[in-house]
Image 1 (tube, rainbow, N blue to C red):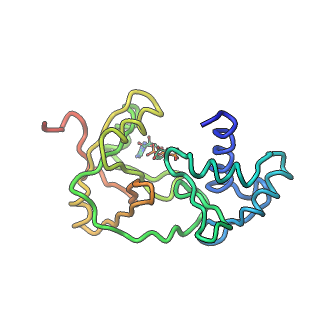
Image 2: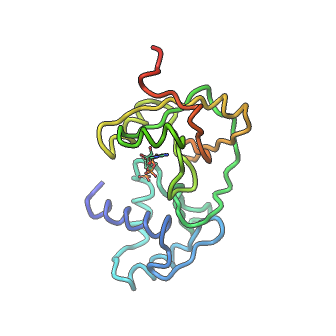
Length: 185
Ligand code: HQG
């Protein structure tokens, strides 16, 4: 992806996940905004962006960060919101094991509190170790945690899966987390 597209992708993430008000737009209850409205407001607030840019960024996003509605009129972010939106997710049965990539400096707190969603709507988990490593590596040397997700499900925790394959849940209490030193190979 070109650098200008990366910059626009970050701009769209910021507006659609965190701060639609920064360009004077509102998202509907499910996180959608009319593309025409978005373009109009973005350009008026100093970000030059066209419909072609939006379509290209949506299709080239490595992680399918955005979705265009079936009628091609609206855009939303697929995940990662800090503003309140209902992504119409249906809970699904969790696999035996999921993974979470983090870094050493968070481990003491995670041992006490489990995985917390922080600014996000959910805790994000990965289906495979490689993806979790990439997520953890955003912050330093990645540390992989195994999550006993099936057991969590059996105990009433709900899991969701986004269109781009990210697993979401509300909170992972510490007793379901297997820390690296405890991994039995
Ligand atoms: C850590 C990116 C201390 C957690 C990625 C993580 C992913 C705790 C950080 C997606 C904690 C939160 C999500 C606790 C959790 N004490 N630290 N009790 N519980 N943490 O970015 O999972 O670019 O909110 O380990 O690729 O890193 O947004 O979550 O290190 O898919 O599309 O607190 O974000 O995708 O960080 O990443 P984040 P995450 P996008």
